[in-house]
Amino acid sequence: MRPAVLRPSELLAAAARRPSALRLRLAHRRLCSSSTSAAAGETPPLPVRAGLVGSATALATPLFPVIGLNQLVFRYLTPQQRLVLAGGSSMAYFSAMVLSPKLFWYAPLLLPFALGNGATAAAAYAAADGLAGGPRALAAWRALGVPLAGPALGVVTALAAPLTYPLSFALAWPDPNASGAALWAAASDPELYDMVRWLAYNEVMVPCLAVTGAASGLLLHVGLEPLVVGRPGWPWPRLAGAVLAAVGVGLCALYSAALRVELPHLRDAVAATAPPGAAWWQKWWPDRTACYVDGEDELFWVPRLDDATGELVSKRLRLRRLNAAGGAGSGSIEYAFEEVGSKVAGDRRAVEAAALREKLADGRLACYASRRAAFFDGTPGAAPLERTHLREMAEALAVGEGLLTDATVLLVAGAVDAQTVERALGRCLPLLASSTLADRVRARPLLRALRRLSQLCLIMAVFVHLSRVYA
Figure 1: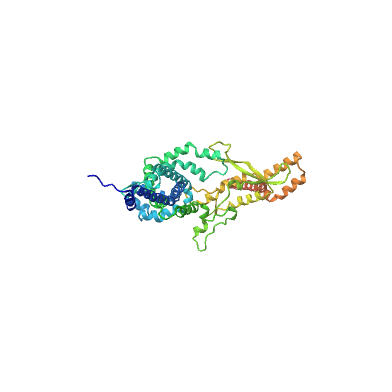
Figure 2: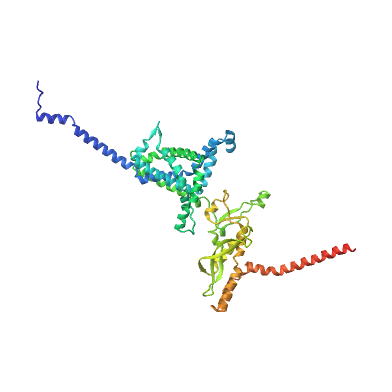
């Protein structure tokens, strides 16, 4: 039996009633392209995704020592020792209410670590994102419903970040007098990397870093997945872009020491005094006021006479510390100075430096060589400028000797007239009067009187002894 043959009009009517496979494929492609374009508008680009991961890691860096400490405590301490460490409370309460607030307050101290952690996390995420084929593929890596991408990236970041710390330290706290080549040499010093390997890559710290990285990575994965992958109906600038901007503001606020407390310059610092009703020890030993100077060189401006015009100028000196003539084991130090920078007309800078050196003698002030160092006053390792050394340095400046030497050389050489030299010396008479040279000259009559008094006392003692013997 032969099959029935349909007419062309009947074929067209059947095609209109029933969609063809081609029409279904076209509709499916249109639907997929629309969903892909929507997802493309909701998923941020790779630089934004990597920036989110890196900045969030840097922002959370103060929490990493807390996680690592808990891991070490539970590995190596007994319950009784943990109770003593936590002050009678649980480790959870101690970590949340004591350690975390303190670490976030002193977060500027962790700035180099935050830079290294953030850069390493951003680079690790960018590499994993490219290898996996996008954020959705990374988010699909799960085991029993637990994300795997975040913990894996956290472990990689925790183990690789210590290798970036020498460079991040050089970038975060650079030497203001160092050039770019010196900065790179300091960051690439092999001894620094040997120290990093000795501290970070051992049988104790490697498990600690891995566990800390896995826990931190899991927390960051849960928090960042909606931002990195995107949310339906939310364009990425409104969600991921806004969060990235907010995290940037948070980073500036968290790691800026200037936003913590107003630290006065030494010229504006007021020495602390005991409050009314304070105990006797607080009156005798009040808390010291932290302040700062802009480098030790700010204290070492001295007056000099210009070798061309004879006019009074201020010159900045830089300290060199040398062993005394007695040898390396003598224990004493000779202070020598060298001129740095350009000279400034007038004696204003020299007068300001003399006033700062005089103010530093107040034991109620703790002065540091920079604003950042003054912020960490009271923390382990914070060392203010030593008053004893500063007094010895001020004596080694030889302000009076330098001025008189300049005046003598200018007059003998005939470079300037005597009136110019006399006028310049007259302007700096207060500095000359307060110099160590003037102190020695003033002390000579007193020393002679004391020497004569001691001789007289010795003669009287001998006379009294002889009178008793021959009485």
